[in-house]
Image (cartoon, rainbow, N blue to C red; front, side, top):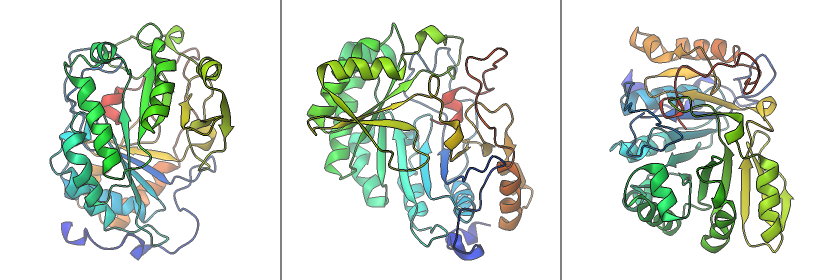
Length: 347
């Protein structure tokens, strides 16, 4: 099967609208692939327990094969996640392999990586040279002491700052910073992040805390809602709403009124965007998850191990996408967390 790795993704598909469409009429164009659930951080809102890696990792060739099949069905954007994807030494090889593929419109796919940035100083340029389009860095405080209290790793703040600078030097613009806000942990960082965005020419995106941690830390009272974030920043730096860049964009975008910078807010709890969801996820061990909060996984890797052809995998994916959930049920009576936490699903 590895011999087919470098065939163009559109070889089995005609141009036209995306072929992956769920039963709710949504086109699925964005694929998130976790390539490891290992991580070098132990963030309090994520790894609240003592668990490490729990799931297997596949070979680069397996991920590339599955990505190629997804591209043949209309996927246009591929985001590599973890855990911490930069822990995979073959990450540049995976990126270059994806860059060699083509979407059904005969374009190279957009490739992004979500990372905690700790190892990015040395890897930003090699990843850019391999074909990386964009990078998003998880960074939950701009105060060094607060940051290290969250990550539980000494020296982590300066390592991430160096990673941001390296990404900018490599031309991975715009560098995006994701900050998960937890009331009582880092909600005092909102205004400081607004200043950081303006001073460092990065796009800061605040994310409402979701019940995806390993233990039972989450409660509605810990969520810092979109409305509060906007009001607090607007008091010190007036904001202007910006239009979405894509139809399935998850972040509400705001520009600073003086034109110096941008922030975004991802509000899955208080202002869910499920109706426009365009995502599907592949875990590090080759399971498809149609939603972050799915209670069922679909074993693509097992199908491949049992001799499935690419056409078999395509037929399976078309069937699986039909079962994509209409929405999540956070905060509703009877809500159950998914069987995996965020670090084991893929950020």
